[in-house]
Image (spheres, each protein chain N blue to C red):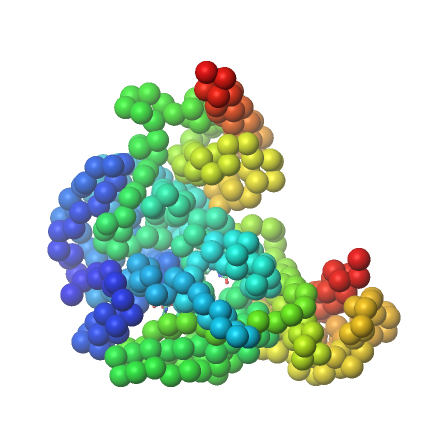
Length: 166
Length: 284
Ligand SMILES: Cc1cc2nc3c(=O)[nH]c(=O)nc-3n(C[C@H](O)[C@H](O)[C@H](O)COP(=O)(O)OP(=O)(O)OC[C@H]3O[C@@H](n4cnc5c(N)ncnc54)[C@H](O)[C@@H]3O)c2cc1C
Ligand code: FES
Ligand code: FES
């Protein structure tokens, strides 16, 4: 069945979705209809986390969200993390640590880690490991991903100390 | 009608009554897997996730009533975890943060998988479900609700509104065996809850039979042996007898996650471990 046209708020902008099938997932709509192909599709069953987005501030697998049911919610994707053309601090940390190999897991990990550091700017390693337990990486062995988190959280700490001393 | 985000239980029930083929959607973590596979296709959908009545919980006297739309993440937070520790432990083992943010208690019950992680806890607590339709409401115990492998007692047009649980005093444990720590469906699971006032222990087991159930023989045995004064560790003979009674009550199968023999062995290990833990906790 074809849905009536609906509107999704993605990265603080409203997007019209027309002629979509009722069964389409948010991941499908983002990639195939809104040309936001940063969120990746690897399993479509919630196992890999490469499709992770924020839904009203919480990490979810966009492959398991029925797109038409996300009307009225705030959706943030990997494309919404940086400011304009600038990459975010976590993206920069991934580059510095060499935490990207094939890159398929990277967008989902970045969204997850960004949210985690917003909630807890100085997480211990167990917290980090648990936070990223739903994001599978087949390439890196996670060592450099953990290193990137350390770099990013260190930078955020320095930043906030600087601001405090002002 | 397409996809409708319901604002109240009444609205959801009215929509279900008007369009009997409507699919109920909560967190989508079971349903969307089927939809993505092409195993089911959606036409009319009523989404329950923004009905605030279904997301709350209330305490009255000796009971707590949980809305069916409560997520695993909410069940894991200190507020509820301090009241319902075994349910919180079970919730923390579900999937990943992404799955726990979306998946709900009501969805776990409606799916009625033998491996559904909340169900052994709910069975051990004799949970009472409140079901609602446009015609009215009825109450049903969790063991009557889960009727078989992935089948439940919901009538057409009915939704699970809430789950009522007793407030128990005493330590609780939930343990699960899987191939790793995160993102794992139970090969065996076990909940052990002490009811200090009722001087009983409640044992719920999952993934070892078509539906999770209470190991009543083991419960009766251990209630008589338990050290209700000091919660001190029990003799090896008692622990072995208890874990054997739990294992003997199960009817596991061989499948891709494990053999029946392995499941029987593991459930005995979990029973003994849980018993040791509820004793240790209050000893110090
Ligand atoms: C990667 C992954 C890992 C998982 N890990 C686990 C795990 O470790 N342990 C575990 O137990 N489960 C696990 N699951 C399964 C799933 O997350 C749970 O069963 C979850 O509780 C389902 O809830 P939901 O809100 O997402 O349900 P949905 O998918 O929205 O719905 C599931 C079914 O229940 C019906 N339904 C939902 N709510 C109601 C209601 N209030 N009234 C009537 N019917 C209703 C729907 O119509 C549908 O048929 C996992 C799933 C995935 C994808
Ligand atoms: S594509 Fe969504 S979790 Fe793998
Ligand atoms: S870099 Fe290839 S999957 Fe992570």
